[in-house]
Image (tube, one colour):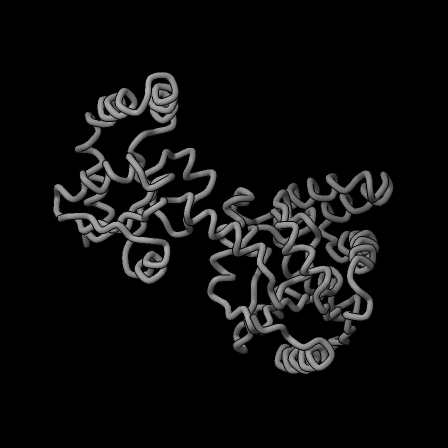
Length: 351
């Protein structure tokens, strides 16, 4: 079958209908890719270096011949892999610029009856789109609150209630503290995180408000895009309040079952800020299984850090909301009422 060359605009309408194949090397794919893509490399990491070097030194023709020399013996393996993974034989394929590698894969798969849509401009076109999208203006509402106030759970409930929500920590595979990586998958690269964020943003109506959790500039080892982070600082913030015991109970629920050695390593990462005595006391409590004690110890530090972070936000755009003792349904009702008050004072921008 003859391939069809598609634009990025065409791509959005087709991507949910057909598997997406990334023809770049495994290293390029690991660095970043279009979310949901499967990697079927035409050139592996080493071969890509060889062909790239030859291209620079001797030109396109020599590099193309070398590429076929390297990948030709593997054509049958690529076909077997594709047929096994993609039995419906209808795919979208891309490489870096939509050039030789995706063309070769498209030609090869067409030989065994695949219908192929090839993305014009390749991953580079997609990446330009995602880079720009996360740096546009968005109508954000920031959900703040000290550690243990259940912000992530409230975001989930808001989403269930029909609100637009971006779970930054979920996209980052990190809960945003020294303990935040425990039990989480490996974090994506910064570039992949931006791709994931753009995918989430693209699904939302830009004329309506989007809830995000209050975060520092970094989530684990990931860095939020500057403009997006500045928008968070400038956006209305709802600072939820819970009793200390409620917060401790929630943290015990989420962290008490985690491996003690990983909890201890997280405490040790904070040693310079906690001081020697408090670090030793927290570790001893973890070893003894006294979760209330080590969590109470940690909250002294995290409450100070939260107060410092809260000072970065515009004071006249902060609403404090006491949710102590309230059930999830009542909490969501109060949050939506607070949202209405915020937008009575700060109208949404339509663009």
